[in-house]
Image (cartoon, rainbow, N blue to C red):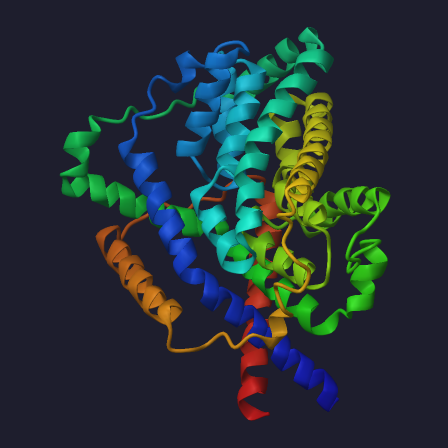
Length: 399
Protein backbone atom coordinates (compact mmCIF):
# COMPACT_ATOMS: atom_id res chain seq x y z
CA UNK A 1 0.00 0.00 0.00
CA UNK A 2 2.82 2.38 0.88
CA UNK A 3 4.33 1.74 -2.58
CA UNK A 4 1.08 2.79 -4.26
CA UNK A 5 0.77 5.92 -2.11
CA UNK A 6 4.35 6.87 -2.96
CA UNK A 7 3.63 6.55 -6.68
CA UNK A 8 0.30 8.37 -6.25
CA UNK A 9 2.09 11.26 -4.58
CA UNK A 10 4.76 11.21 -7.30
CA UNK A 11 2.13 11.22 -10.07
CA UNK A 12 0.21 14.15 -8.61
CA UNK A 13 3.31 16.24 -7.92
CA UNK A 14 4.63 15.53 -11.42
CA UNK A 15 1.34 16.72 -12.95
CA UNK A 16 1.32 19.87 -10.82
CA UNK A 17 5.01 20.45 -11.50
CA UNK A 18 4.53 20.15 -15.25
CA UNK A 19 1.70 22.66 -15.14
CA UNK A 20 3.82 24.97 -12.96
CA UNK A 21 6.52 24.88 -15.65
CA UNK A 22 3.99 25.59 -18.39
CA UNK A 23 1.63 28.21 -16.91
CA UNK A 24 3.61 31.24 -18.07
CA UNK A 25 4.00 29.68 -21.53
CA UNK A 26 0.23 29.27 -21.80
CA UNK A 27 -0.26 32.85 -20.64
CA UNK A 28 2.28 34.32 -23.06
CA UNK A 29 0.96 32.27 -25.98
CA UNK A 30 -2.67 33.16 -25.30
CA UNK A 31 -1.81 36.85 -24.86
CA UNK A 32 -0.08 36.95 -28.26
CA UNK A 33 -2.83 34.89 -29.87
CA UNK A 34 -5.59 37.10 -28.39
CA UNK A 35 -3.91 40.31 -29.53
CA UNK A 36 -3.52 38.97 -33.06
CA UNK A 37 -7.15 37.84 -33.20
CA UNK A 38 -8.46 41.20 -31.95
CA UNK A 39 -6.14 43.65 -33.73
CA UNK A 40 -5.47 41.89 -37.06
CA UNK A 41 -8.25 42.60 -39.58
CA UNK A 42 -9.65 39.48 -41.24
CA UNK A 43 -12.77 40.71 -43.10
CA UNK A 44 -11.23 39.83 -46.48
CA UNK A 45 -10.47 36.28 -45.41
CA UNK A 46 -13.54 34.57 -46.86
CA UNK A 47 -13.49 36.28 -50.25
CA UNK A 48 -9.70 35.93 -50.63
CA UNK A 49 -9.52 32.14 -50.37
CA UNK A 50 -10.85 30.80 -53.65
CA UNK A 51 -9.86 27.58 -55.35
CA UNK A 52 -6.44 26.09 -54.67
CA UNK A 53 -3.55 28.14 -55.98
CA UNK A 54 -0.35 29.63 -54.55
CA UNK A 55 -2.09 32.88 -53.50
CA UNK A 56 -5.12 31.28 -51.81
CA UNK A 57 -2.94 28.64 -50.15
CA UNK A 58 -0.61 31.34 -48.80
CA UNK A 59 -3.60 33.34 -47.56
CA UNK A 60 -5.20 30.27 -45.99
CA UNK A 61 -1.96 29.48 -44.18
CA UNK A 62 -1.44 33.08 -43.06
CA UNK A 63 -5.02 33.52 -41.84
CA UNK A 64 -4.74 30.19 -40.04
CA UNK A 65 -1.60 31.38 -38.29
CA UNK A 66 -3.18 34.65 -37.11
CA UNK A 67 -6.32 32.76 -36.05
CA UNK A 68 -4.43 30.16 -34.01
CA UNK A 69 -6.87 28.41 -31.68
CA UNK A 70 -7.95 25.07 -30.27
CA UNK A 71 -9.07 22.34 -32.66
CA UNK A 72 -12.81 22.84 -32.05
CA UNK A 73 -12.73 26.59 -32.71
CA UNK A 74 -10.58 26.03 -35.81
CA UNK A 75 -13.06 23.46 -37.13
CA UNK A 76 -15.95 25.94 -36.80
CA UNK A 77 -14.01 28.71 -38.59
CA UNK A 78 -12.95 26.31 -41.34
CA UNK A 79 -16.58 25.35 -41.92
CA UNK A 80 -17.51 29.06 -42.15
CA UNK A 81 -14.83 29.64 -44.78
CA UNK A 82 -15.87 26.60 -46.79
CA UNK A 83 -19.58 27.47 -46.77
CA UNK A 84 -18.82 31.05 -47.88
CA UNK A 85 -17.10 29.76 -51.01
CA UNK A 86 -13.47 29.21 -50.04
CA UNK A 87 -11.93 26.19 -51.76
CA UNK A 88 -11.60 22.99 -49.77
CA UNK A 89 -7.80 22.89 -50.05
CA UNK A 90 -7.25 26.51 -48.81
CA UNK A 91 -9.82 25.82 -46.06
CA UNK A 92 -7.90 22.73 -44.92
CA UNK A 93 -4.67 24.75 -45.13
CA UNK A 94 -6.28 27.24 -42.75
CA UNK A 95 -7.30 24.38 -40.41
CA UNK A 96 -3.82 22.84 -40.34
CA UNK A 97 -2.12 26.23 -39.87
CA UNK A 98 -4.46 27.34 -37.07
CA UNK A 99 -3.77 24.18 -35.06
CA UNK A 100 -0.08 23.59 -35.86
CA UNK A 101 1.52 26.97 -36.61
CA UNK A 102 0.49 28.09 -33.14
CA UNK A 103 2.57 30.52 -31.06
CA UNK A 104 1.57 29.09 -27.68
CA UNK A 105 2.19 25.52 -28.86
CA UNK A 106 5.74 26.38 -29.94
CA UNK A 107 6.45 28.03 -26.58
CA UNK A 108 5.14 24.99 -24.71
CA UNK A 109 7.21 22.61 -26.86
CA UNK A 110 10.32 24.69 -26.14
CA UNK A 111 9.62 24.46 -22.39
CA UNK A 112 9.12 20.68 -22.30
CA UNK A 113 11.20 19.32 -25.17
CA UNK A 114 13.96 20.98 -27.22
CA UNK A 115 14.54 23.38 -30.09
CA UNK A 116 14.52 20.52 -32.60
CA UNK A 117 10.88 19.83 -31.76
CA UNK A 118 10.03 23.51 -32.22
CA UNK A 119 11.61 23.38 -35.68
CA UNK A 120 9.74 20.14 -36.35
CA UNK A 121 6.46 21.77 -35.30
CA UNK A 122 6.72 24.83 -37.55
CA UNK A 123 8.56 23.44 -40.59
CA UNK A 124 6.57 20.22 -40.25
CA UNK A 125 3.35 22.25 -40.08
CA UNK A 126 4.19 23.92 -43.40
CA UNK A 127 5.09 20.53 -44.86
CA UNK A 128 1.73 19.15 -43.67
CA UNK A 129 -0.03 21.84 -45.70
CA UNK A 130 2.03 21.21 -48.85
CA UNK A 131 1.51 17.44 -48.65
CA UNK A 132 -2.22 17.90 -48.01
CA UNK A 133 -2.43 20.15 -51.12
CA UNK A 134 -0.85 17.45 -53.28
CA UNK A 135 -2.86 14.52 -51.86
CA UNK A 136 -6.26 16.26 -52.04
CA UNK A 137 -5.60 17.67 -55.51
CA UNK A 138 -5.04 14.20 -56.97
CA UNK A 139 -7.53 12.13 -54.96
CA UNK A 140 -10.71 14.10 -54.12
CA UNK A 141 -13.79 13.61 -56.35
CA UNK A 142 -15.38 16.97 -57.28
CA UNK A 143 -18.88 15.66 -56.58
CA UNK A 144 -17.92 15.02 -52.96
CA UNK A 145 -16.86 18.68 -52.56
CA UNK A 146 -20.22 20.03 -53.70
CA UNK A 147 -22.18 17.54 -51.62
CA UNK A 148 -20.10 18.38 -48.55
CA UNK A 149 -20.45 22.13 -49.12
CA UNK A 150 -24.22 21.80 -49.32
CA UNK A 151 -24.24 19.68 -46.15
CA UNK A 152 -22.12 22.32 -44.37
CA UNK A 153 -24.43 25.14 -45.50
CA UNK A 154 -27.42 23.32 -44.06
CA UNK A 155 -25.61 23.10 -40.70
CA UNK A 156 -24.48 26.75 -40.70
CA UNK A 157 -27.84 28.45 -40.01
CA UNK A 158 -26.67 31.83 -41.29
CA UNK A 159 -23.66 32.27 -39.03
CA UNK A 160 -21.47 35.29 -39.86
CA UNK A 161 -18.26 36.76 -38.53
CA UNK A 162 -18.36 40.19 -36.91
CA UNK A 163 -16.50 42.94 -38.78
CA UNK A 164 -13.39 44.20 -37.02
CA UNK A 165 -12.82 47.99 -36.87
CA UNK A 166 -9.54 49.74 -37.63
CA UNK A 167 -6.80 48.13 -35.52
CA UNK A 168 -4.92 51.38 -34.88
CA UNK A 169 -7.96 52.90 -33.21
CA UNK A 170 -8.80 49.66 -31.45
CA UNK A 171 -5.34 49.15 -29.92
CA UNK A 172 -5.55 52.60 -28.26
CA UNK A 173 -9.01 52.02 -26.82
CA UNK A 174 -10.17 50.41 -23.58
CA UNK A 175 -12.73 48.48 -25.61
CA UNK A 176 -9.94 46.92 -27.65
CA UNK A 177 -8.17 45.63 -24.57
CA UNK A 178 -11.48 44.45 -23.13
CA UNK A 179 -11.82 42.34 -26.27
CA UNK A 180 -8.27 41.05 -25.79
CA UNK A 181 -9.20 40.13 -22.20
CA UNK A 182 -12.30 38.32 -23.47
CA UNK A 183 -10.33 36.37 -26.05
CA UNK A 184 -7.62 35.53 -23.49
CA UNK A 185 -10.17 34.17 -21.03
CA UNK A 186 -11.99 32.35 -23.83
CA UNK A 187 -8.76 30.61 -24.82
CA UNK A 188 -8.45 29.27 -21.26
CA UNK A 189 -12.13 28.32 -21.26
CA UNK A 190 -11.66 26.28 -24.45
CA UNK A 191 -8.65 24.28 -23.24
CA UNK A 192 -8.84 23.95 -19.44
CA UNK A 193 -10.43 20.49 -19.61
CA UNK A 194 -7.89 19.16 -22.12
CA UNK A 195 -5.03 20.71 -20.17
CA UNK A 196 -6.23 19.34 -16.82
CA UNK A 197 -6.69 15.83 -18.20
CA UNK A 198 -3.48 15.96 -20.24
CA UNK A 199 -1.24 17.00 -17.36
CA UNK A 200 -2.92 14.53 -14.99
CA UNK A 201 -2.52 11.65 -17.43
CA UNK A 202 1.10 12.64 -18.05
CA UNK A 203 1.83 12.42 -14.32
CA UNK A 204 0.07 9.06 -13.98
CA UNK A 205 1.93 7.60 -16.96
CA UNK A 206 5.28 8.95 -15.76
CA UNK A 207 4.83 7.50 -12.27
CA UNK A 208 3.01 4.22 -12.90
CA UNK A 209 3.91 3.00 -16.41
CA UNK A 210 7.30 1.22 -16.63
CA UNK A 211 9.76 1.95 -19.44
CA UNK A 212 9.30 -1.63 -20.71
CA UNK A 213 5.72 -0.77 -21.72
CA UNK A 214 6.90 2.02 -24.02
CA UNK A 215 9.56 -0.24 -25.52
CA UNK A 216 6.86 -2.83 -26.30
CA UNK A 217 4.35 -0.30 -27.67
CA UNK A 218 6.83 1.85 -29.61
CA UNK A 219 9.03 -0.85 -31.11
CA UNK A 220 12.66 0.22 -31.15
CA UNK A 221 12.22 3.03 -28.60
CA UNK A 222 15.41 3.60 -26.66
CA UNK A 223 17.56 2.33 -29.53
CA UNK A 224 20.43 4.60 -30.53
CA UNK A 225 19.82 4.02 -34.25
CA UNK A 226 16.40 2.36 -34.83
CA UNK A 227 15.84 0.73 -38.22
CA UNK A 228 13.60 2.49 -40.74
CA UNK A 229 10.75 0.03 -40.18
CA UNK A 230 10.93 0.66 -36.41
CA UNK A 231 10.83 4.43 -36.90
CA UNK A 232 7.92 4.03 -39.35
CA UNK A 233 6.04 1.83 -36.88
CA UNK A 234 6.55 4.36 -34.07
CA UNK A 235 5.29 7.10 -36.40
CA UNK A 236 2.11 5.08 -37.06
CA UNK A 237 1.63 4.29 -33.35
CA UNK A 238 1.86 8.03 -32.48
CA UNK A 239 -1.52 9.01 -34.00
CA UNK A 240 -3.12 5.77 -32.76
CA UNK A 241 -2.12 6.69 -29.19
CA UNK A 242 -3.41 10.25 -29.73
CA UNK A 243 -6.72 8.91 -31.12
CA UNK A 244 -7.45 7.03 -27.90
CA UNK A 245 -6.29 9.77 -25.53
CA UNK A 246 -8.28 12.39 -27.56
CA UNK A 247 -6.62 15.22 -25.64
CA UNK A 248 -5.96 18.46 -27.53
CA UNK A 249 -2.48 19.39 -28.73
CA UNK A 250 -1.80 21.64 -25.72
CA UNK A 251 -2.60 18.81 -23.30
CA UNK A 252 -0.56 16.36 -25.37
CA UNK A 253 2.77 18.20 -24.96
CA UNK A 254 3.48 16.92 -21.42
CA UNK A 255 2.62 13.42 -22.68
CA UNK A 256 5.06 13.95 -25.53
CA UNK A 257 7.72 14.85 -22.95
CA UNK A 258 7.01 11.55 -21.17
CA UNK A 259 7.34 9.65 -24.48
CA UNK A 260 10.63 11.43 -25.21
CA UNK A 261 12.02 10.59 -21.77
CA UNK A 262 11.18 6.94 -22.50
CA UNK A 263 13.14 6.82 -25.74
CA UNK A 264 10.45 7.21 -28.43
CA UNK A 265 11.90 8.41 -31.76
CA UNK A 266 11.61 12.03 -32.89
CA UNK A 267 9.27 10.99 -35.74
CA UNK A 268 6.94 9.13 -33.39
CA UNK A 269 6.68 12.11 -31.04
CA UNK A 270 6.10 14.58 -33.90
CA UNK A 271 3.35 12.32 -35.30
CA UNK A 272 1.79 12.23 -31.82
CA UNK A 273 1.87 16.04 -31.57
CA UNK A 274 0.50 16.49 -35.11
CA UNK A 275 -2.46 14.18 -34.38
CA UNK A 276 -4.85 16.66 -32.74
CA UNK A 277 -7.05 16.62 -35.88
CA UNK A 278 -7.35 12.83 -36.18
CA UNK A 279 -8.97 12.15 -32.80
CA UNK A 280 -12.50 10.81 -32.39
CA UNK A 281 -14.26 14.04 -31.25
CA UNK A 282 -12.87 15.87 -34.29
CA UNK A 283 -14.05 13.05 -36.57
CA UNK A 284 -17.58 13.36 -35.16
CA UNK A 285 -17.63 17.13 -35.67
CA UNK A 286 -16.34 16.83 -39.24
CA UNK A 287 -19.08 14.26 -39.93
CA UNK A 288 -21.70 16.66 -38.56
CA UNK A 289 -20.39 19.47 -40.75
CA UNK A 290 -19.68 17.64 -44.02
CA UNK A 291 -21.10 14.11 -43.74
CA UNK A 292 -19.31 10.89 -42.79
CA UNK A 293 -17.80 10.25 -46.22
CA UNK A 294 -15.97 13.57 -46.30
CA UNK A 295 -15.06 13.26 -42.60
CA UNK A 296 -13.32 9.91 -43.15
CA UNK A 297 -11.67 11.25 -46.31
CA UNK A 298 -10.22 14.27 -44.45
CA UNK A 299 -9.09 12.07 -41.57
CA UNK A 300 -7.38 9.67 -44.00
CA UNK A 301 -5.61 12.54 -45.76
CA UNK A 302 -4.42 14.01 -42.45
CA UNK A 303 -3.12 10.62 -41.29
CA UNK A 304 -1.12 10.13 -44.48
CA UNK A 305 0.36 13.62 -44.50
CA UNK A 306 1.22 13.76 -40.79
CA UNK A 307 3.08 10.44 -41.01
CA UNK A 308 4.88 11.70 -44.11
CA UNK A 309 5.74 15.05 -42.52
CA UNK A 310 6.97 13.45 -39.28
CA UNK A 311 9.23 11.04 -41.17
CA UNK A 312 10.52 13.81 -43.43
CA UNK A 313 11.41 16.00 -40.45
CA UNK A 314 13.04 13.05 -38.66
CA UNK A 315 15.31 12.08 -41.54
CA UNK A 316 15.87 15.70 -42.58
CA UNK A 317 17.31 16.50 -39.14
CA UNK A 318 19.17 13.16 -39.11
CA UNK A 319 20.84 14.10 -42.41
CA UNK A 320 22.48 17.07 -40.67
CA UNK A 321 23.03 15.17 -37.37
CA UNK A 322 20.56 17.46 -35.60
CA UNK A 323 18.22 14.91 -34.03
CA UNK A 324 17.84 15.48 -30.26
CA UNK A 325 20.09 13.14 -28.31
CA UNK A 326 18.57 10.32 -26.31
CA UNK A 327 18.43 11.17 -22.65
CA UNK A 328 18.40 14.96 -23.13
CA UNK A 329 15.06 14.98 -21.31
CA UNK A 330 15.48 13.05 -18.10
CA UNK A 331 12.51 11.31 -16.52
CA UNK A 332 9.94 13.97 -15.67
CA UNK A 333 9.43 12.44 -12.21
CA UNK A 334 13.07 13.26 -11.34
CA UNK A 335 12.78 17.00 -12.00
CA UNK A 336 12.78 19.59 -9.24
CA UNK A 337 9.91 21.74 -10.46
CA UNK A 338 9.29 24.22 -7.66
CA UNK A 339 12.25 26.55 -7.29
CA UNK A 340 12.89 30.28 -6.94
CA UNK A 341 13.82 30.92 -10.56
CA UNK A 342 12.58 32.66 -13.71
CA UNK A 343 9.57 30.28 -13.87
CA UNK A 344 8.26 31.52 -10.52
CA UNK A 345 8.56 35.19 -11.53
CA UNK A 346 7.00 34.62 -14.96
CA UNK A 347 4.14 32.65 -13.40
CA UNK A 348 3.51 35.49 -10.93
CA UNK A 349 3.50 37.98 -13.82
CA UNK A 350 0.97 36.03 -15.90
CA UNK A 351 -1.18 35.20 -12.88
CA UNK A 352 -1.42 38.94 -12.25
CA UNK A 353 -2.22 39.56 -15.92
CA UNK A 354 -4.92 36.86 -15.87
CA UNK A 355 -6.53 38.37 -12.76
CA UNK A 356 -6.43 41.83 -14.37
CA UNK A 357 -8.08 40.51 -17.53
CA UNK A 358 -10.68 38.69 -15.44
CA UNK A 359 -11.50 41.95 -13.65
CA UNK A 360 -11.59 43.83 -16.98
CA UNK A 361 -13.91 41.27 -18.53
CA UNK A 362 -16.14 40.29 -15.62
CA UNK A 363 -18.97 39.00 -17.77
CA UNK A 364 -18.06 36.37 -20.33
CA UNK A 365 -20.51 34.10 -22.09
CA UNK A 366 -19.77 30.50 -21.27
CA UNK A 367 -20.04 28.12 -24.21
CA UNK A 368 -19.10 24.60 -25.14
CA UNK A 369 -16.80 24.30 -28.13
CA UNK A 370 -17.34 21.31 -30.34
CA UNK A 371 -19.43 18.23 -29.71
CA UNK A 372 -21.59 18.83 -26.60
CA UNK A 373 -21.72 15.19 -25.54
CA UNK A 374 -17.92 14.94 -25.75
CA UNK A 375 -17.54 18.24 -23.88
CA UNK A 376 -19.74 16.99 -21.04
CA UNK A 377 -17.67 13.81 -20.76
CA UNK A 378 -14.46 15.86 -20.77
CA UNK A 379 -15.91 18.18 -18.10
CA UNK A 380 -16.59 15.31 -15.68
CA UNK A 381 -13.28 13.62 -16.46
CA UNK A 382 -11.52 16.94 -15.79
CA UNK A 383 -13.31 17.21 -12.41
CA UNK A 384 -12.18 13.66 -11.56
CA UNK A 385 -8.64 14.64 -12.57
CA UNK A 386 -8.77 17.65 -10.23
CA UNK A 387 -10.00 15.39 -7.40
CA UNK A 388 -7.14 12.95 -8.14
CA UNK A 389 -4.60 15.78 -7.99
CA UNK A 390 -6.04 17.13 -4.73
CA UNK A 391 -5.85 13.65 -3.16
CA UNK A 392 -2.28 13.19 -4.37
CA UNK A 393 -1.27 16.56 -2.94
CA UNK A 394 -2.70 15.58 0.47
CA UNK A 395 -0.84 12.26 0.33
CA UNK A 396 2.38 14.12 -0.52
CA UNK A 397 1.92 16.47 2.44
CA UNK A 398 1.38 13.63 4.93
CA UNK A 399 3.96 11.13 3.63
